[in-house]
Length: 505
Image (cartoon, rainbow, N blue to C red; front, side, top):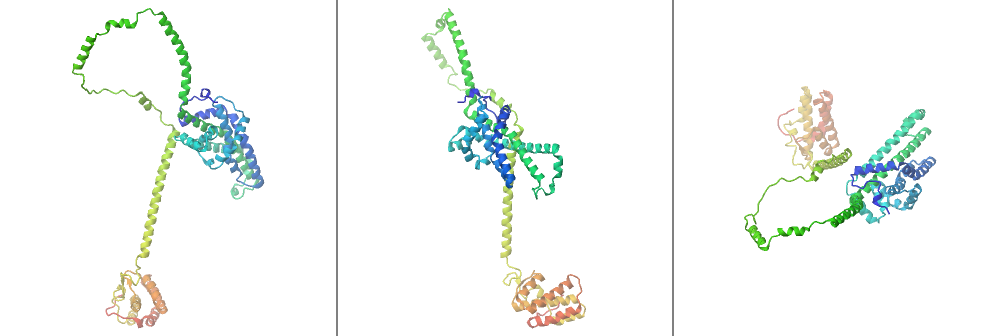
């Protein structure tokens, strides 16, 4: 059974960063054996995945190798659990223990727990404490109740691994395979990876990934393991137990010497007893009674007094004031957490604004659908043929007035009389109501819905000629206007109910 007096790391509470640093120091002391342990499982799986990928073309085989990373890290954990207490565990024994716990590994870190960012810390709870499932969950919650920074350890090691992989392949390629790089047609790299040169470089990239992972894995496992040990020190007071054990030995030695010295003094003492010296100073009963009476009769007895005195500063407050500032990484982690919270709030505000605009837009669409149309016959805002502004002040003889204006060269006025007269004729015939602000195109849409085919055709041609003459400043031929007058007679003259009044153009 392990004993904390054999710890190779000083048992004292540390911060998460200090625990990681202690783990890295422990990893450097046993670096070569741990790399060999990691390669013992990783390399065979990697070779099998590469072989299957070459033979079958399955590009996802390297993902399978990555998925089994917890298997490669387990022997390092067993090795560190013994090395921390000054015990030796051979590579063969570490591999044997890993195979013995493979089923537990498969049920945990090779399934859903593979995506856990706290694997470096919780690894030890699963495989070293060997607790039942419910107790294990409670234990993990207790250990991770404070900031252990395990996720930052994972991110840092992951980035270092990528940087190492790219650095190795870039350095080797630039030094020894510069001509091979020039032979690769990089323009079609993403379209076709069947080129032999591309295949070779993909294999080389996979190998450098394996090397980089092997170099970083001992630090990742050792850092997480020391975070776990640090939490146990904090919860179980290993530092106090360790100090008491040292204090006990020293206390026994010092106590024996002090006891012998006291006995020697007592044996050699010839002075009179202390009690005999104090006898003359003891008061008689009457003197004691008088002294007590004087104290009770004194004016200060039984009274209260308030006095302000300066307060001495607690020594612990000095320690608090002299605490060093947080490290850069801790500040960065807290800042990242604050930024994430702010970003989340901004995102929810944007979502709320978007929903508000969506509801407002739908409400506006609903109003436009439910609002009465300007051309609706039942619209309370509509005007009939007798009150509509376009049908006012028309002459009695529409055709005669249009011919007179045309003969006088007033083509625009003639077309205006024809258009407004046609509109009034259709409104009278079909009892239409049109909004006073309706445009000429709106009037055309209403007329074509209810008028006859001849009326619709004549009204459309009349509107087209009127718009070119009035708005486009394109003088229309007199023959076209006379043709419209003749068509107007057959289409609208028999239905018109003219108002009396003067002509306005």
